[in-house]
Length: 167
Image (cartoon, rainbow, N blue to C red; front, side, top):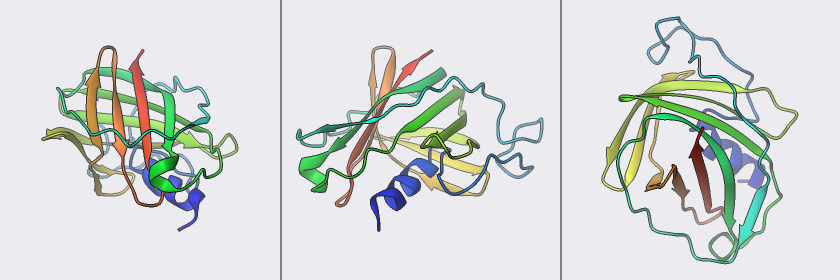
């Protein structure tokens, strides 16, 4: 899989894709308004930062409440053998109880994509079960930290950390 393809795949689970436009669907993950969420776009473009540090082990924590935005996106070169191309990413994710909504995009020229569904902690992983824009489950490693959290996506080809902070 190409670096862009893998980034598309990984970020799709957070409501992002370089492959599909913003959606406004009525299905299992849709909000009562019939959309894939209403979270406000608070994004700014975040370039990839590269590190030779090993991929950190997820430490878990409590499910967050509030709205969070991507502040840092790390690619672990030692794990992935990269570096791959620096692909800018934008993410806003909101948690209310066990519900989540996201809006985001990969690269400046792509359309934003929304997702919505339920979230729960599963050991040191954050399980995101989304039904909008299409059903699926995504389970990144999760580490709570003061004012935000880190999602860890270890992979043989492309290992990433997404650091999100509360707005």
